[in-house]
Structures are given as C-alpha cells and as structure tokens.
Length: 64
Image 1: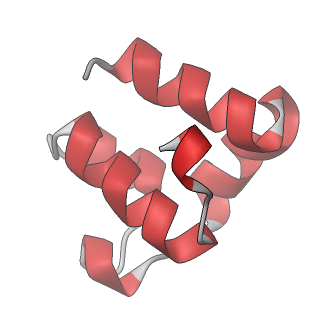
Image 2: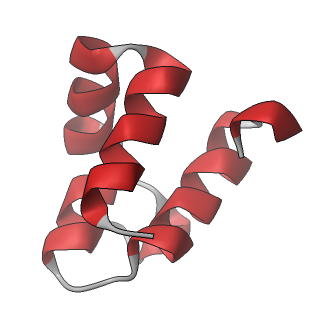
C-alpha cells in the first residue's frame, strides 16, 4: 500500500476533511503514541498504519 492509497481509504471511510483532521490529531497507543499521520511521516508502512486505524475505528470489512 502506498501513502496515496492510505489517504484514499481514509477519505472513503471518513470523508476528506474529517479523515485528514482525524489522522493528524488522533493519538493511537498502538502506533507508539503517535497520530496516523505522524506514524507515516516516521516511516511506518501505510498498510500497517491502516490496519491500526481499522481496528481503532472498528471499520467494516468492506472498508478494510
């Protein structure tokens, strides 16, 4: 998964504005106390960050 696909999936799940806001402000302990955006910037794989987001938001399988 590339960063562009991660952001496309965030948009699909939450809408563009809210998805980006949430990813930039929501700290997740499973990401080492970082936001998803921080984790991506730190070099975490987008696929792994997306998996954590899916678990955190309890997204349905159709969005995973």
